[in-house]
Structures are given as C-alpha cells and as structure tokens.
Image 1 (cartoon, helix red, strand yellow):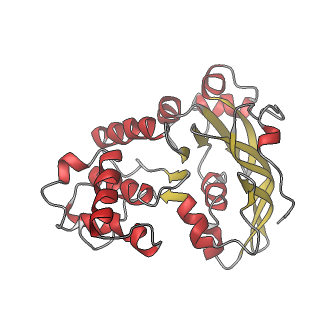
Image 2 (tube, helix red, strand yellow):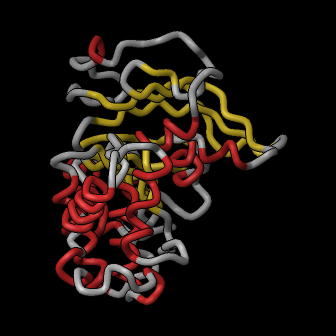
Length: 273
C-alpha cells in the first residue's frame, strides 16, 4: 500500500472524478484487490464523507462487499487476498504496517448481512467490546455504556427487562439492532454495513433504516445494499460498481434521476442485475 499520508482536510473542497467537496472521513485512491491471480477490484477512487450515508450498489459479484471489507482490513483474514492502493482514515494510512488492526476495527466498526449476536446475554453482547478495549473503569461505567448503546440502537425499551437473557433469543430485526448496539458501544467513527437488512422482514427493515438515518448524525456510514429503494431512502451519496470497477459516484438524488453512465441507468431501471 502507498504509505504517503494525504491530509483529508486539504481535499475538503476538491471535486475530482465526481468526488464530493464535503468534509471527508475516508479517502480511497487506486484501490485494487486480488484473490490469488484473480483481480476483483480495479483502481477504485472514492471519497467517503463525514456523517453521511454512502451506499454502494451494483449487481451481485461486482465488488461492493470486497471494497467495503478493505475499509477496516477485513480482507486480511483471507490468505489469498492482496490489496493495493491507498486508504486513509482522516490522516491515518489504514494499511500502514504499524497500525494496530484491532484498534482500527474499533474505529471502523462493521455490521454483517446476517445478524450474528454472541452466544451471551444481551448485556454481555454490548459490554464485550468496551471491556476488551479497556474503555470502561467499573461496573457502573459499563452499565451506562450498555444502556446508552442500546438506546442509540433503538432497542433498549424492548429489552430493558431481559438484559440477562440470551441475545440469540431476540427476533431477527432485534438481533440486528443488537449487533448495531454492539458496534457503537466502542465509539466508532465509521460504521460499515454489509446488506444489514437482507435477512429481515419489511417491518424490521424499516426500523433499521430509521435507525441508520438517526445514526448518521454522529457516525459516518457506508452501506452495501442490493435494494435500489433502500439506497434511495437511506443514503446521501451513492457509488455504482460493475465488474470490479467504480462506474460513478454522486449525490444519491443525481444517481437515481440523472446518472451519467449507461450502466448505472440500466441497473437502476432493472434492465440487468
């Protein structure tokens, strides 16, 4: 990876290749990903704005989730995966060899496609991160973090009388909100969401979408979604991927009403994908 530090503040007013002039949180340049000899992403340039929702859309297998996993080095867990290019979180090079990956993943949290609560109580699911990262100084401090996180995730009122029951006993939608509470308990700056509603029913999906809209007041969010309607509802910016290439990125309204590329037009109108 390129280790040259690039100040995001210097780029706040830049508009380049459809990049935004809003304050940046992450800056990705020339990002390519290889699985052994197969290239999955090709020279992706993408700015991720602070306290906005950026949606990644495109057909299955187009590289959306691969790119998302680059942002907190989840691809490190795949032996045959190689990432090239530069990704900066503020002024920190995410792929600097001296970076503590555990600390990075606390700053850039992740919510997965299928709800994956730990086989522990609701309380312990949320308390786990703050405890292992040493973010709390005692029992009262820990309880406050757990309650605050559950409230931010819109779940506290539903579970306040059963905090010591298993998290796996919750409904699918509640489990996903528990996973969101678990992610925000360590005070991340960025939250990555990989199709967080694909396993949920419409009512649970609507609740999570409302939650995403509330969370962007305090967090930068990047969401992968197959649902055009969901991208239009929850995001302020949308990036369209096709066959490992970033086709275009722009304000969500522009992408859905006046895309500049024919591939985007074809995808959002359902002609392929």
